[in-house]
Length: 76
Image (cartoon, rainbow, N blue to C red; front, side, top):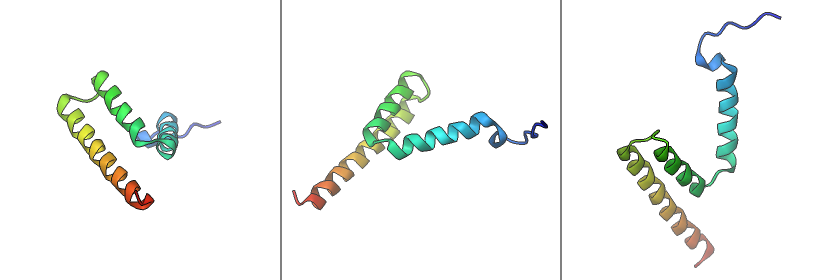
């Protein structure tokens, strides 16, 4: 069987499977899971302090906005 020529990273099976995995995670993920992943990324040094602070604050802002929206929609 002839192998396809790899022209870009998108042709790599590992990239294609990674995209499938990420898509699955995002479909079932929650904001709290994202916040956990941000902290893990910081612990593994994938993020520096400034990046962590920016992402963490943005996620907390979204959390507050979602909580407010849920309260308003539920009449509480």
